[in-house]
Length: 298
Image (cartoon, rainbow, N blue to C red):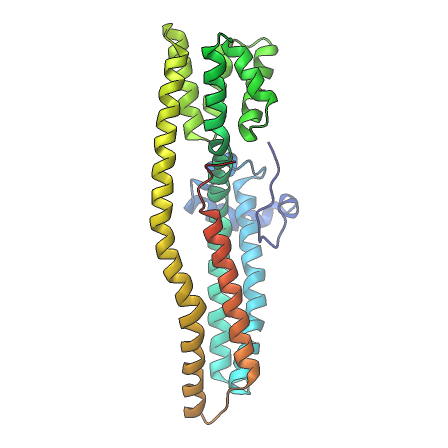
């Protein structure tokens, strides 16, 4: 199983594997709440026990919370020129908010990584199936066509078919190797394709017809994915414009009004901090939107 370190996690998984057993109770408690996380870790090929992953996620989120407590303190001091009730409240709210946000992100990441891994397969699967369809139509055997796919540049699809060829060369039957592929793969499309080829092979039907139907289904699905993404992108564009343009302006206006009521001024440092935070949120949104781009072309 491949090793992956989740992005933005400040506490490494290698360190989590060496944590004493007496501290695992917290991770075990979280894992019982998120019972599906164990399977998400397996699908994402993250090599660590679910309890230790949850504990690592908690520690990383706690570090983020502590860091942003100081960020909240700096922002409060810039606005009020003192460490008062407003600054303390801002420190607590900022720290707790970032803690829960990052904890949720770390716990959700394996599911996202599993989807991305399956997307890597789906991205090249259509081209691979078309190549297989052409080869089978010209008289090439199923084994040879899968072998050619494994040696071609089809990314994760070539890797999956390479494992099938390896199983067959080690003495496993062709149907058993395809069955292992169906159980192993994270891609629902490849899983369905493998089962369809298996069923056709066992019933003595035409694999060419089965693959042709699967290719047509995959093309139609990708067209639907493009349409859904286009509709979703309109909403994200509106949200981005609100965060990039409206919220900084309204935030500065609110602080000016609040500072005038509190008999304190708002300096250029506060404005600069708002601009930096707004820029950070915009970058995060751009990264999020990019992750939602359909992986349908090479």
